Amino acid sequence: MRIDTTLIPSSSHLQNLASQSVVVMDVLRATSVMVQALSSGVKEIIPVTTVEEAFQLAKSFPSETRLLGGERKSRKIAGFDLGNSPREYITAKVKGKTLILTTTNGTKAFHAVSSGKTVLVGSFLNVSAVTQRCLHQEADVILYGSGDEGELSLEDTVCGGMIIDRLIHLGKPPIELTDASQMALIAYQRFQRDLVEALRLSNHGRTLIDLGLGEDLSFCAQTDTTVLVPTFKDGVVRI
Image 1: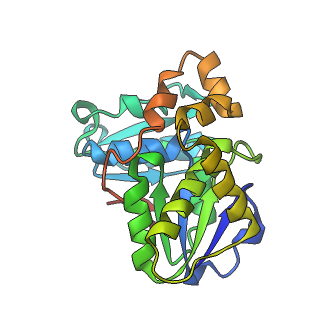
Image 2: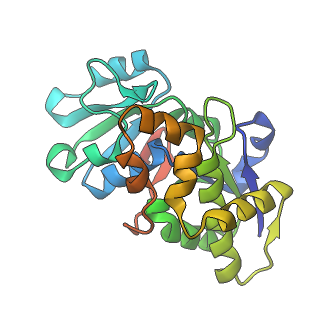
């Protein structure tokens, strides 16, 4: 198994995806929201790239069956039901509903890698389950960090490194790491005893703290709160 890691979102990683499993990570906070929302009973999630697209798509659903969620500049969008904090996505609010989600980085990433053999939703919340799914795919893996507005994201890199570490320890076939994957593994080894520290040191983590959303860091740094591995297919994320 060959494992590559996208440290910075780039089209160079988007060639020949049809034979590869892709794990999309946007730890702060889109993929954490997706995993939490589906764990809380959301029926399905439709990630879209623009606010305008989200409002337009919402017209296709009865208002009582859908939710609009997401952020711009880390804040809830005017007219939306929910923001981009996974702590908002509790069963009482979301169970049985379709979530239309748009975020600055994460939702774009899913559409960028839609041609992958499988496209999985990765986060610390479901890291062990994602690792197991990768092992059973019998395909090379791309760990696709959504980044921070085109720049490297420390938290996504560390999450990718954690998946790599577990694949190495659990994988029976030989594991081949690219240089980027080696770097992600080293980043994880630096922070493995305190994942929250990595999130606090990250650029986006500091932004969230400044906005009074620091509790999201601790929430998103939890590991293995669920065994769910959502999959993105035909424009929709489902279990």
